Image (cartoon, rainbow, N blue to C red):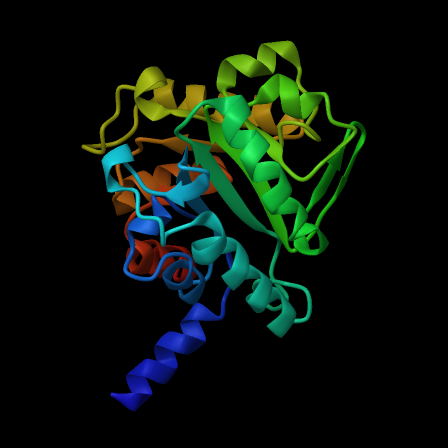
Length: 253
């Protein structure tokens, strides 16, 4: 049993830049389970309610003990201190994708001073420059795009959508572009992805990368077949709720 545990820990030490923990907070140990599996990207839904930023999937599931700071920011700061300035030793910046479930401006107004407390570990975004820190915060859901764009220096980026590419947003404002797989593709995990849809996916990836953004899809089949399609097309972040499954897939390819 001890040998198996040691082997698991060894595997967990390998950072997996493509691994994105979707609805991360629903795991038994939010953030920590993902990090133990080598994930370099985690997603947290937040509600601004009763003066607090609470992590939950649905409004009726909020718990005053489950704050963004308690579940994510404080543990990340401890990890960064322990590992000499990185979340994973010798790993990339960890992406913390924060999905706003409540109104954009008020939620961001509450989030901004909280993030200031963790400035030392966060990526700083400016109009023409990104200074990468141990943790890169990107806002999704109800995104305060205009408010963030108006800041001279910001501690957050914006999660774009594929139609946003038509406006040529700066990658220093929109480092990531995400969208719903089912809006653009018919494939649902059965059989092979058609040549037409393969070409369409590769075109989306190429266009997004050429503009300096990373790309992610949600609602992709959360199976090895879905992961393979994402990996082979060069999609930067692969969504999953199955942490050990995706870890094994990416580690043994």
